Image (cartoon, rainbow, N blue to C red):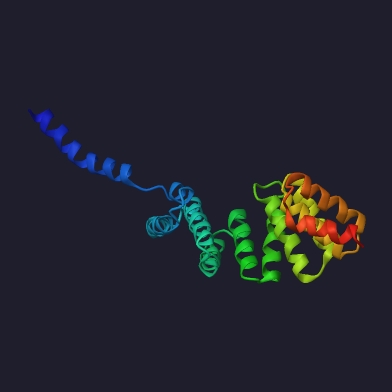
Length: 210
């Protein structure tokens, strides 16, 4: 009888804990399912309970939260919480790349470029390296620095050669940089990958008619 009472007491303690663990929502899974607002709420709750020594867990929560803000177009929030994350660990590559994107979409070209360059130095073979170079290429186009845009977009395509839109943008950078032959090659590659790519078709028409 005494053993039964002890077992029941232990069950009373551990069953609620198990239920809580089972009910805990996965912020990353919420993000992947497009539930961005809820993912942010879960991440904020996690940050409230993590201790000083739980740095990796904190950084994971900050990253999922920033990604969710990006999906919602809340770039200022992504930057704000990204800065908080970088105050914990200055070299988190995921946060750095996200910061670059947030500044890019806000039109803050120099800030964006700085973060993308940091990402490329820290993680030259990272999962987002081709995107980082693509964004750098777009920034250089915005700045009218077409030779630099050519290099950045060519590097992006080295990593991901089957993105028609990037070939089209490379064609534009080469065209603006007065590399007609190179532009023709890039535009033709874009059309080969995507026959209805309007930007590439227009580029070909301009160059072949000139």
